Image (cartoon, rainbow, N blue to C red; front, side):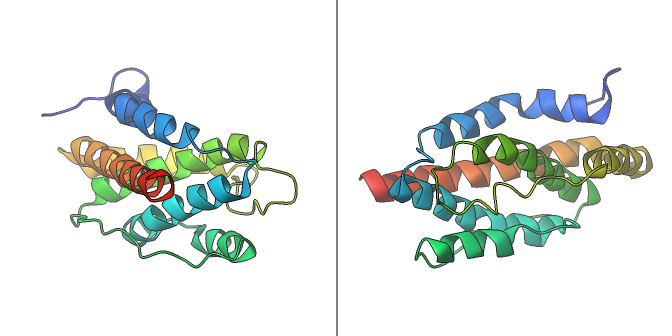
Length: 179
């Protein structure tokens, strides 16, 4: 399948192609109460299962894994075994992963407001600095322009892989906590 960006550009094409998967991930994680120590710990553990493989493959400029590890340590929880990601060596795929990871920072900023009083929130509060989101969007557009045929298809597959890994981790942790 070949995906072509419409007048809204690369971000719009990625958002449209991944909307259902994004909604699924949002629904999974909406079931975690962030004001409860146990539920919040489970939420962070689920993220800690997905984030290492995604950051390793995407190679983002700013990594949040150390912040996540610190938040878990504050809750007396160790880093869990990470899930694996079979990532092809394709530039578009890495950009798709980065698209999902950078977008999750935006969601994290909103979620951090729901974290219970006194609970650590460094990971969710790791928002973009002034101008960083716009710079990412420009870099994404530039990479797409230089990427050639199939780049956007690869980027969509990367974003879908990121959402799938977060979904897998979120579902597995819910089962582990709730049985």
